[in-house]
Amino acid sequence: MLLYEFKLKGKAKQYRLIDEAIRTGLFIRNKCIRYWLDNSKVGKYELSAYCKILASEFSFAKKLNSMARQASADRAWAAISRFHDNCKKKIAGKKEFPKFKKRCHSVEYKTTGWKLSENRKYLILTDGFEIGQIKLIGTYDLHGYQLSDIKRIRLVRRADGYYAQFCIAYNREIKTEPTKRMIGLDVGLTHFYTDSEGNHVDNPRYLHRSEKALKRLQRRVSRKFRTGQKPSKNYIKAKQKLAKKHLKLSRQRKDWACKLAQCVIQSNDLIAYEDLQVRNMARNHKLGQSISDVTWYQFRVWLEYFGRVYGKITVAVPPEYTSVNCSNCGNEVKKTLSTRTHKCSCGLVLCRDTNAAINILMEALSTVGHTGTRAKDALNAWGELSLYLDSVMSLDKDSR
Image (cartoon, rainbow, N blue to C red):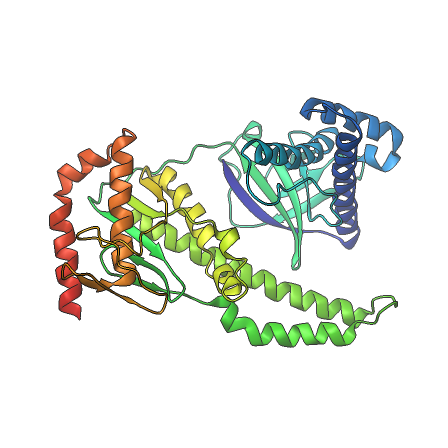
């Protein structure tokens, strides 16, 4: 599945109608949640049928395309099914019970309610809101895809304007020559990651760079706010500038993670990384902000995506004891977070993160060998692991 995004250029009236369509989709989603709460044994198909009842009861809901209403019901069912799955898996803590949403930033159309112009540069929305023709601004070419391949169109409102996302059914595959390389990655806060060869990639720290500007914009928003009064134009402008700054920050993180993941995938045939629960780690009141800033989760998502595109092996390894165990003899060497050097009784002296990356790679090789993949054959073809580890350790000692 491909996702192409275009910016929409239209009139102020069209933007207001898009906002109305988004609010209508949110209304239908919340109504479906209420219908599920009031009626037992309600499933996905019952919620889809309930959309027709809502259209007959509310005139503004009827304006929204029928498949767009069903897409809003699908969002409600996604929240419900996630709650059911968490209960079945007996996940500790909160089970993410479906909640009513106050805000929404997008509405989805499936295969009806829209069409494209002949030159594929204009999107025409044909449902009851009568948004009409709106220009698409972007570099992607839609001429290479059939209209039947476009499964969904999502209208998104952001701080800097309105966008249209095209979800295209296409199996993207890129064939490359084998690099005959394996790598283990240990992510961190001092360095974004350290690989099993001893290489480091620095953490960009986008939030730290923009922290002063964010605080200044936040103070402006606070000064313009008046409790119990209608928001002034200056308050709306200040809030808009703050939102644009946060949007730029999120785009910087995404771009960094995407480019770095593609570079790692293209340079190696097997990539091993830690299976971290980033959401739980971000709850740390001392390191939560820094953990959220390094985008470990986005990096992993892009690694797995490009792994499928380029046909490479990506393995998630449990993080337990990867920093404690010695990569040479396997003994436990306990150390605090401030201890950055691994020193074992067997004589091995390594960077703490490099030792963890080697353990991650070794664990991944043993895991994929049992699951029937070609990693073990690749290991025999590329050379023995012991020779590889000896070379890495000797290089690290020479550097010290």
